[in-house]
Length: 179
Image (cartoon, rainbow, N blue to C red):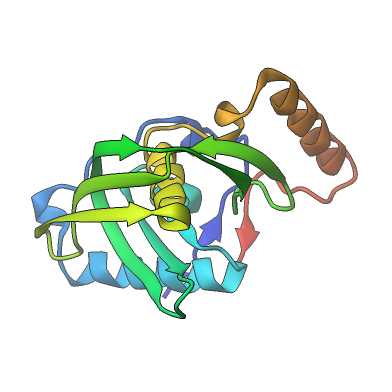
């Protein structure tokens, strides 16, 4: 089985809108791909990973968000559609496609998302806090939006300068990171 590669900004796949997963795509190969994404995400130390981040321009992602009670919000979310958002939270946000970069980003506190599971069944999730932040961040990836786009212009410029410094020192690989 081929090892997944996490692509880094400014790879074009991160900046384009993913196509929906079609009914004919659900099956064992798709579920295996989702399993590989969970492994890559965990190996890289993330809580979410969208298909565009592994070079696949499709609308799905995986997430495994720890909860205060020791549980986890672990989901594969296919063809997400945000039904409702409310509240506000601001916190440090990072991204596996922007290694080492963390910025304060404002997001909604609660999200209700309609989607499909890995079998193509329609489901609806009502998530709060970090899980809501993760769904919003990964859905953005499916829409060709990166978290730089959610920063103030000043913070975005400072982040781009930091990325340029990392690129110039060889500590940022534009193409991919093996996990």
